[in-house]
Length: 342
Ligand SMILES: [Fe+2]
Ligand SMILES: [Fe+2]
Image 1: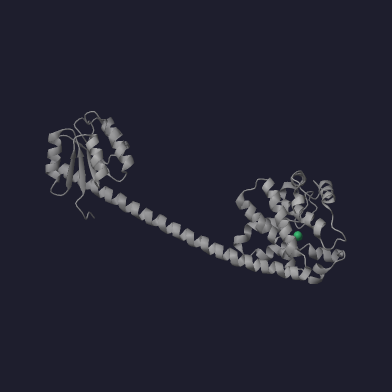
Image 2: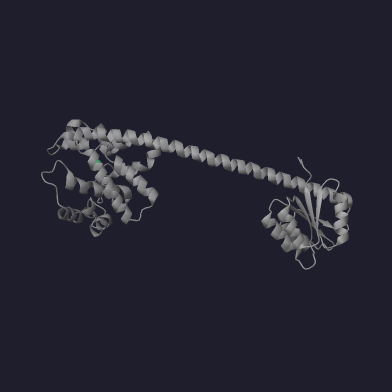
């Protein structure tokens, strides 16, 4: 519905055409007149124009180029081309450049009124759609903002709960809390050298922090045992990666951490657990965790009589490269002298 008197700009170098157009349209519309492109551009910049009636053959100006310029600057102004020489090719070009309709001189009064009315309706529709799209865009942004906030709140409260779980394991074995912190640090140092994306680093951090969460479901006597585990006890201990997956499974937003948690005890030669994956079948985050986990157990495990010094750990890594560990990750750790940072 049109509420106000629309502004119509007539750009035509023929005085009599401008006058006759104004005479017909002035009862219903505000009509501004421009004899050339320059005056037309001035009106466009200083008034809120709804419709332009534009002469295709303006003296000294390419009407089609002016049409394209106006559409580029004011995409929601509808333009009706006015011409005395209507070749099909020219009309086709005008439509392609964005004109909504055309009038051939001399035009009939009723035809002019009808074409202008249709152009105004077309403009109203386009503006209506634009407003709806703008509102939709705004609602989408607001919804995204709400989802982001909800996710952050969920992550924070879950992180607190998971930290509480890790501290619970730590209270059983007095080791897990500091162990996961060191494993996380070395894993991220390795990832940095591998040029892993920031998002993947976040998931690696999350996986490293939670890699032993499954120990929550392992009997305390096994966790606290300082001497070597019996075969039976070792079989129980070997269940902790899959127990970890069970614990975080109900938290779907942590699903990207599952592969590394599940497979951090796989071996590069396929002799590991729980799935016996081999080489690059093992998710790369699990291959990183496997090295970081082993390094920390060699350097800090309370079960060992004396912790290994850096040189010995490096020799162990090298002799197990391609057997227990991914040789490329071992190479990154040795070349980058990463053990001096943990
Ligand atoms: Fe583990
Ligand atoms: Fe571990």
